[in-house]
Image 1 (cartoon, rainbow, N blue to C red):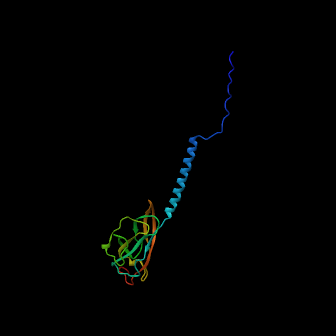
Image 2 (tube, rainbow, N blue to C red):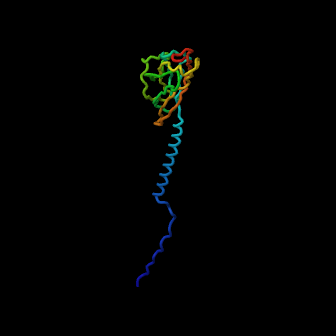
Image 3 (tube, one colour):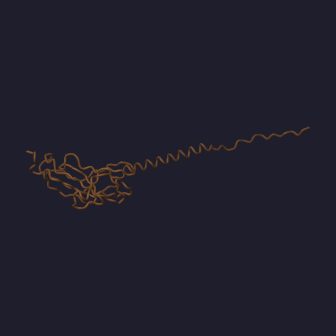
Length: 192
């Protein structure tokens, strides 16, 4: 006779472990969520980032002379931690007493006080300002528009518009400059 065969009963099920695929799915979801949070915070910070200031140059109160040339200069300084690419300098617009002809940027570094000739400047083009760096800006135009103002009144120019990019994020800002005023004359061509 043969010996009886003893069969083992099946092993009880062990603890349930998530599969590797499910575990990797959770890890990927957490990483994606972290990247989105970091990108959102960086976007908010960069959207509010405004490091540009102007250093003292500029102009003081000026006597209006219809059609005569007029210019003002300022140093644009990056006081922030990140480099920025300045893409435009937007002269004052609207009803003013200056008609802007062109905007120039210094060939190297700061504007030269009192130098409003083109020899130290070139036509405006986009440029990068590293942290602490500066470039001179020269805005040239002519007096025009005295008929838009009452005698002995006129605008005070206190800010300069500009657009720039920081790490590809475009920004527009208004940069305070040394304020200057222009008064419409008591006699103005074209005004009765």
